[in-house]
Image (cartoon, rainbow, N blue to C red; front, side, top):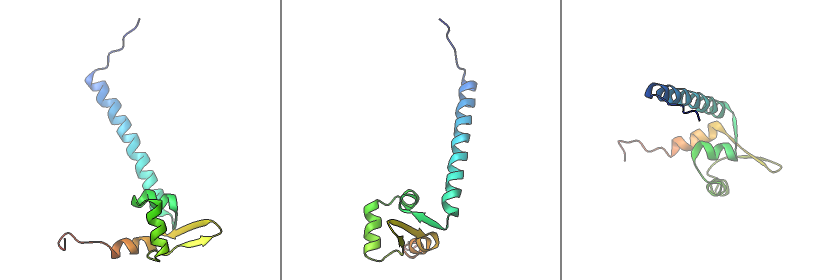
Amino acid sequence: MEIDLVTREDLKDIVASEVSSLREEILAEMKRILQKPYLTNKELIRRTGWSSRTLQYLRDTRQIPFIKHGGKILYDSSDINDFLNRHKIDSRDA
């Protein structure tokens, strides 16, 4: 039976490599999401952390504009950014 020992340096290198790889994936995904002019429900949920029910409520109460073509719902990224900025609370006001 063969036993492999991992030194602290080896472990640091492995962790650093994995963290770097994950960081690159996250940055690429963020860039892809932020560059899209229109967002789907799934993308908006991922971006904001809102639930699908919250999105439905915001649409029903006409708080956020949306595009509906057939069964597909899209949100203009700039409209969502405007909505978020209107509801932004500055730290000095809190």
